[in-house]
Length: 142
Image 1 (cartoon, one colour):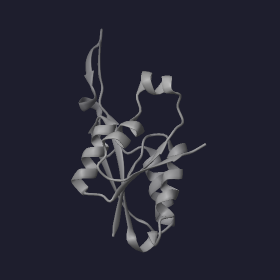
Image 2 (tube, one colour; image 1 turned 60 degrees about the vertical axis):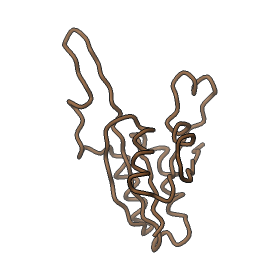
Image 3 (tube, rainbow, N blue to C red; image 1 turned 60 degrees about the horizontal axis):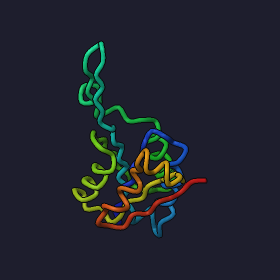
Image 4 (cartoon, rainbow, N blue to C red; image 1 turned 45 degrees about the horizontal axis):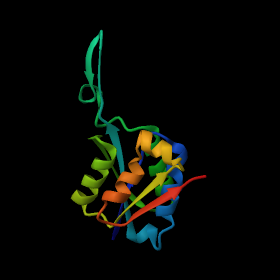
């Protein structure tokens, strides 16, 4: 069984291309298991009303609609799926979960960004590519 980690954010527009890439793997219906991972990004906000930490509002069972959409797409292709939700830094969590589950590869969607945009806002995809100790496939949806 070939096990793939498929990180899915809240944007369903880009993740379907990554789901289709997983579904198109050889013998996907019989030989591929996809672990759909959603990471709720940690945050902390302070203001006049007090302090709010992402730990206080995150719900382990509250998956975004994009996870359902990806799961449905993979099910249509006959790919076995499981889902998982974590809290923390997305890139770090993706790397940690990939190692914990000892997946064979990571398949994720990405967006084209300018070098300045990457520098100012960072890039989860870029961080995973640089830190992963296993193959990473990035699907760029036009």
